[in-house]
Amino acid sequence: MAAKIKIEKKILSENDKIAAAIRERLHQNNIVSLNFVSSPGSGKTSLLEKTIGYLGKDIKIGLIAGDVQTENDANRLKAAGGEIVRPVVTGGACHLDARMISKALENLDLEKIQMLFIENVGNLVCPSSYDLGEDMKVVLMSVTEGDDKPLKYPAMFRRSSVMIINKLDLLPHCDFNMETARQNALKINGKFKIFEMSCRTGDGLDEWYSWVKNPKI
Image (cartoon, rainbow, N blue to C red; front, side, top):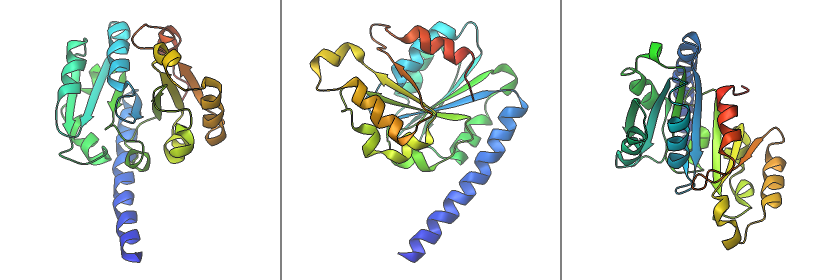
């Protein structure tokens, strides 16, 4: 057991060094970076599609789309209007790491980017431990997942700065209490900025768009 802990610390230490270099490089280019995390099916890709479709003409957005086996999400983002999209296929790994992001950035012209969106692999466990050099993590949950999600995955919710509750259109069909979800999240992270929305109907998206234009980091 002790040997495994030492190996894990070594891996994360190396990751943090690379992440720090990424963050410095992005800041030198005045790029704001957001790392989107969630369990599968919460709506990360849908939210990014809506966001780049609405803000893409006003803000130069670069996207790194992580997935375990396919480039499907990256292709969706391109179809939605993403002009600078780089897929990262992990080949089975349950998270992105800083080395993957660093490699993806080698193929990006940072002078053409004002914001960088990173779509992480659908997972609320492993991605919480890996700094990708982002300014903040944005964690999504949907009303179909249960209002106790923050309590089940406290590390991810503690290390995120923004929480999005998605799929409000399905609320009448789910045993989900919005106020309970908010309070559970705030127990873990009292500084959360919380958005409630439906990417399908558009409810709540205007507030999100306004925040993305001037995110408080």
